[in-house]
Length: 203
Image 1 (cartoon, rainbow, N blue to C red):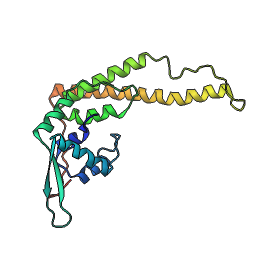
Image 2: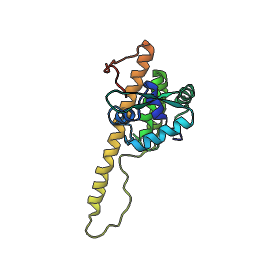
Image 3: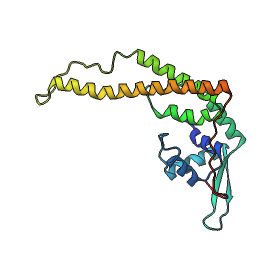
Image 4: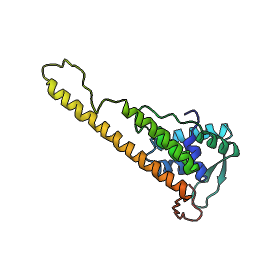
């Protein structure tokens, strides 16, 4: 990913400090495959600022050190929207973080965007599954005397069946999500969960 679109996606939800971004990645973003380390976050923020996609304002605090609050510029908003509507190419490995990252930060622009992503991912996984011959295909092996060929084959089946079943569950989740998004679009109903935030809090 050439630019740090996930950070743009978080800042599109609300302006945040670098520390706030780290806390977000540690909590709400814990399943998105990125560690909340401050050094790469500030490096990415500097790059986004150089591109003119974000700007920072200093927020003074009477109880602690001043903080820089980052927000999107109009160019940053345009870059995020353009990225969200780019064609999505699924990764070969099922459940790679690429899809869930795109779903979270492109899909936040609307259920129609989310649905297109889900349909692309689902179609790819169904075609991928159709090309497979089964949960495990063992090849002839010549192990050392301490290893039983029969047990080796069985162990390979056990290991591969875990991935096979996980992918099956993933495909089922995608199918259910596709149906849910289609229903939301048909009903024009957008579920919203409000969470109060302490007044004056800086993220």
